[in-house]
Length: 507
Image (cartoon, rainbow, N blue to C red; front, side, top):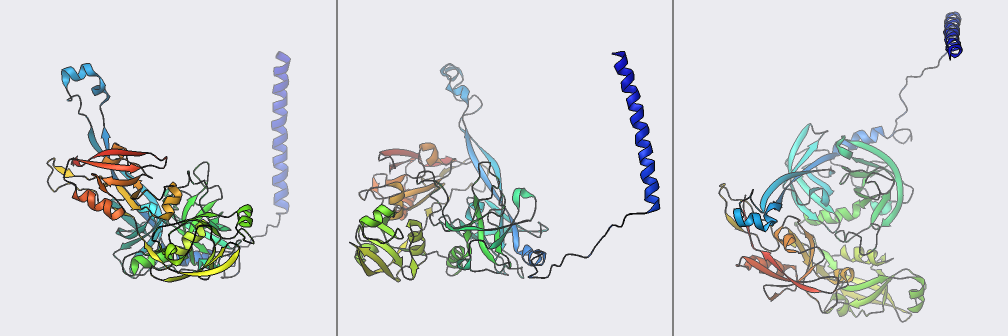
């Protein structure tokens, strides 16, 4: 052990001495002849079209991309677990700490959006502002902040239009998403994780995508899916932000990602600007979004089905059912027909058919090319109108602070929609079932507490039949009793009654 220590000491001293000598040698050499280091401080050639930088383009469009802050005041009921003890209730009743008290907490969400007109109209994703009690828009990395109101919201495409009170704003230029090709360079601009405006680059990875998952797991709220897939990094806070082409034109609204971790894995989805513009134009021109309706149940073709129905390839949609008294029935369509195109647009599958029909105006004439028993033919259908989602505004607290009994009907915090053929297909609801489909339920609502859930079909309210969403809304508003009896059909084929509290106590 001792020898080892001495050896180590000697070795250390030798190393120090050697290092000192070497250092002196290099210093002396440097004084004799300094190496020639080449330095070029000229900025990179950022001329547009040079391919070296996107900085000039980003400087033009960055002011058009805004931060969106939405706030939700969520009410939650608290149940004191002590009151579950019969012995304590016997002595203290229901006074132990209060029971079923309602607490309100503040949820804040972060997203992005784009200024599309100089007078303050903003395009974003619906899920960024859905259910918000307050919405604020930050411009120029929040150096200026405005209160915003929702002009129109479309859960079916996840698009919303906001308005702020300002003028002379830098509006972004809209492109044409139908001109995109796989491999085109795209840039995503938004506010990921609240870091501030961020730009990422990628390419168009695919076109015409739907969110992955089977019919049971896919989010049915987004019913019209024609996504641009990109590997440009998209993260939380990017939702509603811009996807632009290499010339800075808006070609998509960043909307969703696929990732096992919740952060970018190189698979992001954007709503094409052509689809978003159709929605936006509906809200800005008259304030109503109208969609065409055909009324067929359908399924995608595979090679075996294509051969069975006399179709040369698997492109097209197989009609499996026709809605009674629907535009399809009046036009002469039949179960077993294979629809290959609507107007000038080829139909490649079920999603393509729904999207194509939805973008046509109600009342318009649609030429439908199809194959029936192996023979090609053309029919003309006069399209109907697909109804938008309807909901009842949540009751608000009175001006004074005194607890007051308020009406809180069965659709407070609930969104309903007509049970059309698209929903029948998704829910596998037989034609004998009619009513209004529940598309969203606030977890803190009386309806959720009673057991109403998304996917339920409301068939009756207080023993009165419900045929569509308007019936559901009007029957709930007309209810006078403290409880509303709701009869629902569920996708498992069962029917049940739910009793919903028709009052709430303001806190």
